[in-house]
Length: 167
Image (cartoon, rainbow, N blue to C red; front, top):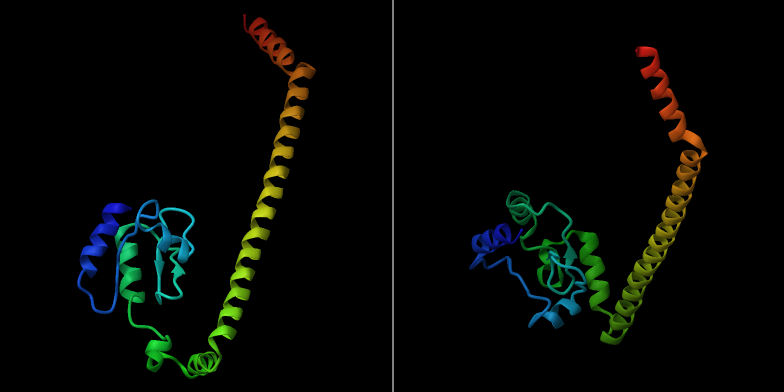
């Protein structure tokens, strides 16, 4: 993916409306990566710098390029309210009327909801993993029981009979 990403960065170099860049989350960029919620690598984010979204598309150049052309454009936001539809404008205006403390509280609440969703997902995956392990062990036990019940010997006798009958 790195060569394709580098090619896309070169294509958008100097753009006044879009930034395509990379950040080393293991070195100098660690604090930025933590701030925007990057926990696995490589991760691609896009959108308003204060509310970045996760990119879920293809990682080859043509997929990245197509996505960039369609999405790395000025978009509805508090700084580009003229690009918003009426419903989004109203939502932005309502939020802008709130105090900084109120917004901080609401943001914290929503971020806690995100953490809870991730926690629930992780717990469910752990349960699935335990169930999978249980089923695998059960399968292996049953397979061993079938084989130990004389299957191998039956196959050997059948082969011997076929050989004897074929002579």
